Amino acid sequence: MKIRIKYFKGATKLIKIQKGNWIDVYANKDVFVRVGERAMIPLGFALELPKGWEAHIAPRSSTFKTWGIIQTNSVGVVDDTYIGDNDEWHMPIYCLQGKASEKCLDESSSEVECDGTWIKKGDKIGQFRIVEVMPEIEFEEVDAFGNSDRGGFGTTGVK
Image 1 (cartoon, helix red, strand yellow):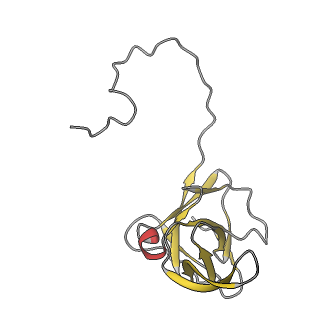
Image 2 (cartoon, rainbow, N blue to C red):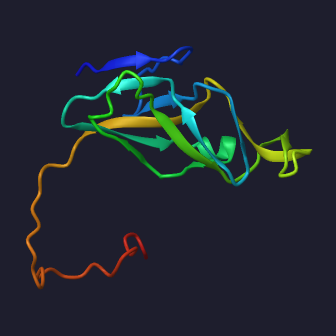
Image 3 (tube, one colour):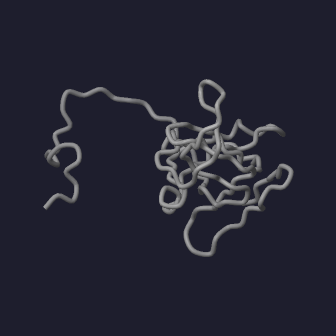
């Protein structure tokens, strides 16, 4: 499958990794995010996804350990209509743990030390994969399924 991609100025080019099914994404701008604040990290590209496909963006397994951030919406979903020339992909993040200090302005415009984290241009902060969209479905309402219960929500793997 070929997918058209547009890179924004200075963006890191995407490559399909040899192991696994996800493609790494990179920050396209230096951003300092204070602890307890959020930011939209530009990823430097737009894709023209084929009709009937969508992309799922998620943090890498090392993202929190390295930067102390989480993705605010857990998994981002980009559908096949987000295909305009200026529809740059972003990763919304929230800083939970400071990894650096910087001079910031407080409420009274005084300079103070702020805990936070630096996301630097070129940092590999997330990953994505494309999947086919869910087929059309119709719900059929019933009073019972006639199946045995598994044990309640969250019981898989409990010994």
